[in-house]
Image (cartoon, rainbow, N blue to C red; front, side, top):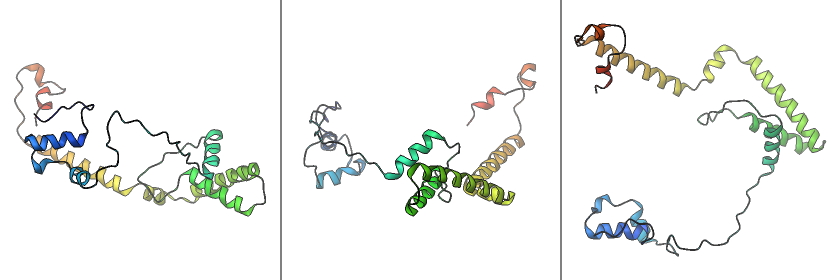
Length: 189
């Protein structure tokens, strides 16, 4: 037997080791991490009953997080952000850049810098909307997504055309011959 699958008995390493020894798992099917774990075992064995160390969690807090939190709390920017688009920066990123530029000048207090940065951001967004021509707006659409959608549509239309060119099955009754969904065609491969 290749040991128990209960997490309280042994570790994942010992369970895989038992499977390999018992012949339940072939050598070519062993996980990628197995050899690395065998070569470099951890200092403390990762068991379920091991007491977690009482190390305080460090707070990762950046200066711009305060400004960004204030922006989102008071103004709530309404924009859609594409995580795939690396060319454009979000409103909050633009705001933080403007805020940091004004802060390095050092002429105003934090509240005045915040308000001035808001005004400059609104002005910058307005200028970018006015300057954008329909061609530029069309270019901003992610071409990869657009081409993928187009290719998916072409594939669907081609497969539909090839299915419709084949001889359709004759209806079994008058009710099947009417307009509607042919249930038999829904479950075909």
